[in-house]
Image 1: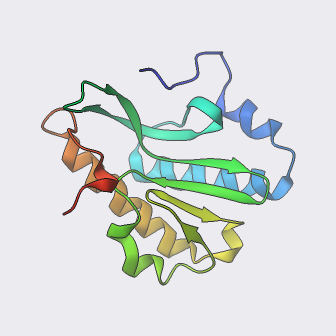
Image 2: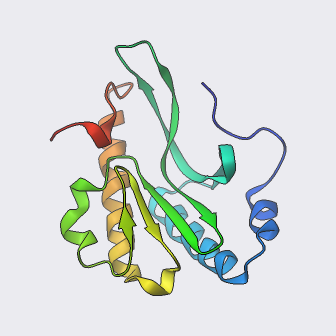
Length: 149
């Protein structure tokens, strides 16, 4: 299953198409942060997700594909940060983050000024390192954010 966008849209053009100046600024900050953490250029994935790095998964069910190691989805008034290892692993840091909400692997932030940026960076760094470490020995064989550690 291929999730990257091959419609020849660049990340820069996508960010420029956003109609909210604050969302553009926050997106530029997240791109810089995630690129520094991952060492990868941003890639546009389906539905406007901006991802950094990839990992391969192959589940016992036969489902197989590639995912972004870290990434985010910018929308007006809501940034979704994807932690592919799940939010539960980061509960202590999330308690120090500032105004946000979460689901299984998503952190929702209205704008970056609502949170402590160094805390967010540490969370993203730890998530990236965890997913990378799990993918070193071949395909990831379980949904990491559902797995119990």
